[in-house]
Length: 270
Image 1 (tube, rainbow, N blue to C red):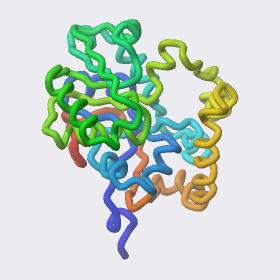
Image 2 (cartoon, helix red, strand yellow; image 1 turned 120 degrees about the vertical axis):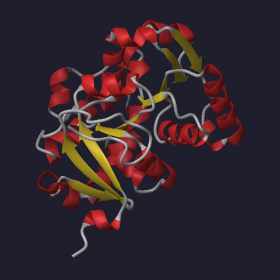
Image 3 (tube, rainbow, N blue to C red; image 1 turned 180 degrees about the horizontal axis):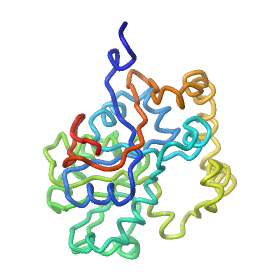
């Protein structure tokens, strides 16, 4: 009998240590996305976003809510904010050139991380829908030729831009889509206390901190989760979830068996 995996492209959501993720990113040619509940919802309705996930080399879990309620805490949660913080603390980042794409100044980016060379690109709002603006970002990344690219323009723009950078032939730099990581690091937003993150309630803290910005998004996320309640309740047992024609497999892993790269099947687990 055909299985779920036979009927849809597969994306593995991996539980990996921060050291393993940092090593993969610093050695190049690796694209890392961090899956949260909003991303699940977008996977169901945005074909290019779904394709970007299918092509990513590493996808981590960025949702304590999913991990606590539906996965019974079987996964390591690795958020974009935590990854940026971990990378900033690694001495190896100082020997690499970095380009940040987002609403951040060069001075602000330098306050978050130290690197051999740091460049910043600040695209206009909604740039992903403007081919000329996207081409300008691609040209500036090509000109800078960084070792690592941090994309902090929000979903689905960040992931779609990562896909377009790769399709434009920019294969060498590692790419991390990191959401609001720089806003948290700079104190523009305040992260929830650790105990709220561990219990899956960080969303409540963020909603209370910024209701005007997040109320609509979280209402949409809640509606999506309710519509997926049946499959989600089976997630802990099956380790699998199908969203928008993409089959997600959730796996806790001990490390990387070989060099990661952009594209499905480019990563092995040890």
